[in-house]
Image (cartoon, rainbow, N blue to C red; front, side, top):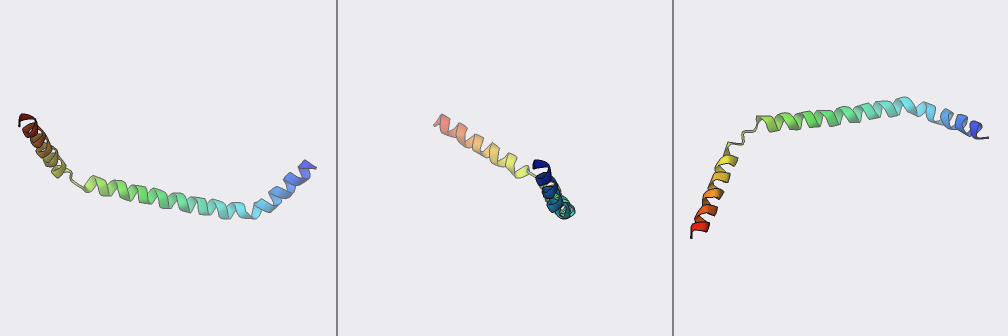
Length: 67
């Protein structure tokens, strides 16, 4: 009885395998392209202003400790 169920289940799923594979590949490609775009966009950004902000905060903290 279970063999018959498995065969029927496989027959029902068979038409959807190709479409599901295409959808999966499409979603994977979209996610990979968004990830790649995000990484390249961050690489192009310069973080020089972050060093200046950190240095200013350190100066402020040191001045607060002295006062």
